[in-house]
Image (cartoon, rainbow, N blue to C red):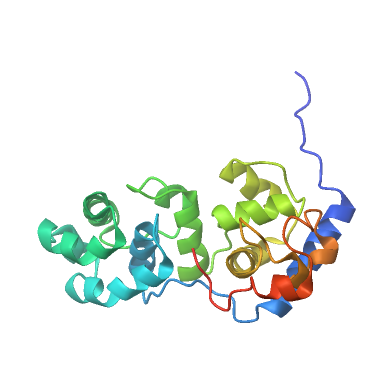
Amino acid sequence: MPAPVVPAAPPTTLVRRARKVHRVLAETYPDAHCELDFATPFELLVVTVLSAQTTDKRVNAVRPTLFAAYPDARAMAAADREHLEQIVGPLGFFRAKTESLLKLSAALVEQYDGEVPPKLEELVKLPGVGRKTANVVLGNAFDIPGITVDTHFGRLARRFGWTEETDPVKVEHAVGALFEKRDWTMLSHRLIWHGRRRCHAQKPACGACPVARWCPAYGEGPTDPVVAEKLVRTEGRN
């Protein structure tokens, strides 16, 4: 029987550079955190599902009304469909999102007595829950390290030269190999904050970037400090 193939360890220089970037981002964004408001694991699971194809700000705006009416999985599973549609209406795709919430809540009630399971393999089996959503919930509601590969995280991981992968799961594993597991959740927040505020998909603020010296993609956006500074956002945008 042939010996199993052991994946090659990331080059030491890449690990050092990646961790230096993370340290500088930690200094740049000391308040980085999940920008979705929540009070319980169930709330975080629901608002994360709702955040697809809309902004965190819009989700946060409907959250008080949503959970005042349906504070837990049992209440939401028994929700009046039309009433739920009215609440999530401002987020767009309200029929599909209402269907997702009803199925998700029912599954939680039927399989977990209304509680959110703190395990990745169980979360991803729930209706409408993928690895990204599961890692958000694990990292922020249960303090279980996870990497959240959204569009910002994936874009920055490739710009930083940490991986060439485009598949989110492959990005998650490639980047995870560069960092201590305990850092995964905050790494996710800091990259997402940087992506929303400086390293935009179009015209990144390269001349106002604190990690420019370690970025192979430096120059994709304006390098003039004055021009670049005008692109910096004080608040994130999805």
